[in-house]
Image (cartoon, rainbow, N blue to C red):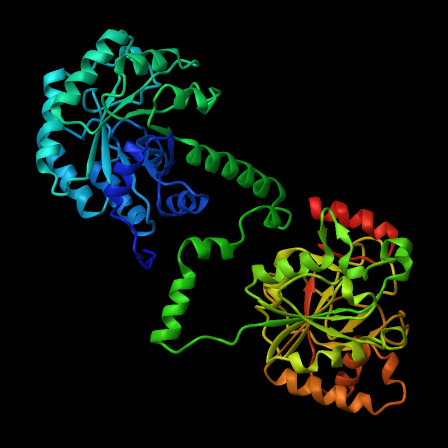
Length: 548
């Protein structure tokens, strides 16, 4: 279970009581496990509804007490441990008679659950929206006994017991609902939940008018959801429960994703449209564990840094780059640089150096180190790279600034062993290529096996050479340096800097120099799912790329 550092928050029972007694209208939302509870809290909700329907659904059983109350309480413990806001449990009928109710309250208090709502139906219950008019109601005196037993059992004076009235659901009318509400009030309930299955709130508003605020009034507008909340506020409602929307949203998203994966036999197109794994780690409290490891274990691998080469204007883009460098072009509402930084963030790469040149003052993205190649018009990529030498790191990504790629490409690159690793697209039919492609000739062609090959660079060229045979693919413009690779990179740059033509040299020229010195450069093959932006036609392709 994820451990969350507790701060100076009021007791959860006090928080719930404040919600019930608030002079304004308050809202809580359903959650059904630890991660949905964390999401609800991070969204800003002040409280959680521990929905019986939703928890039954996440277990894959019916909302008919098929999940035992101990299973529900176990799940509540996870939900309570990872949140600071109160949980009001949808406690069905109390899971039995008055004695079950006493034990339930004790177990909930032990887990810092702030309150329980019990409904006046018979055990085992059936969901109110499944033939609710045929469901028998509990005897009033017997139900009052449950409320009294719960109140007598609680040790925390602020623990709340809410009485849920099903008379309107069962078709017994307003008079019966008010009669029951008054009895439950006298028995010690801390609030009344009045339930209706109509698509309009007429029954609820009529009840609220007659009830006149004798106890906090709670509603669940599942069927009359289109009613403006101002209507509820005017009627004197205390608390609105959005009772099943988290589980319904999750089901819809999972059905869509699973169908797409099944049909395509791939997750490549889906990956950028779902929550990144890093977000799951965050909801699980992984950052706290990392801090704890640093404190208690003194362990952890060096983080990865990034260098983005972005000095060029991109002359083929004409007036689009009149007042900005290519890297600041907007693609579907987000600049190329911002898209790169977002991809880095997904992989926990938080230190980025950008080498600017043309219109570098327009590079206004925060959170980066900006280095300037003032000679960008007359120099090449290696000169720009040397401008960032002070930011070289023992584990770093180097990439062109006009590159777009699917997240998995960078994720996989970070997982490949090797001091120097370049990414090569082995698919010659990926699509049109603007600019000059960097053809790569490798030790082995891509066999597309399940297991990674040990493939190494032999030569890189802008031209297809008969002497070297068919190229193995194209370099996409991204590489990783780590370990001994940093020393090899620095040494190669020092040697090339002594050449008269250094100012015109590119990264492929550096690679060829290192290969000539017998320094291995490992190749990581991919198959499409990237593009670079060099021309006006690329802008349109890039827009399509970011929308799929």
